[in-house]
Image (cartoon, rainbow, N blue to C red; front, side, top):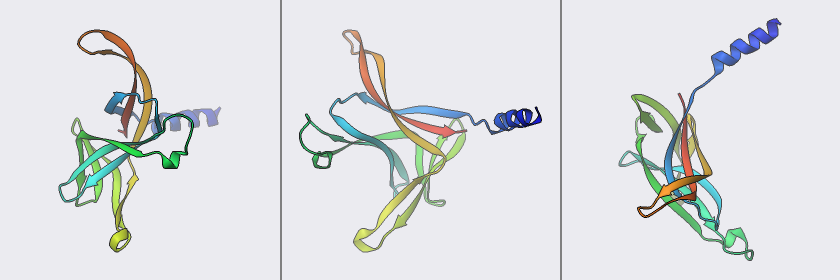
Length: 151
């Protein structure tokens, strides 16, 4: 009984409220494969944004490696790059969340920014949603990118 009480208490203390924000919503592309959402930065301007990367593969022939890499970029209100801490931060409702750390790796032409998620997650999901196009309201398949923060 003591173990159950202790486990319940720890569960209540450790419960973290996660906040989800839809940062990108586009019509679902049935040819899109290998969907992945990632942060990108422009360190000189202190900017950060979200990319939805995918490959378009038509039909059943050919390998996915041959399929072209496509990307959709979106600016997220409250998301920025903090040069002092070298982190991507997200500010919403007065709460500042560290989303990812940015470190420069490699030398010369192999130099690149390695972005490691810390306090946020990016999730890609498909939903069915009622959409008003100005003429009619109909149900559409949509692809959403969610920014999930642990507040």
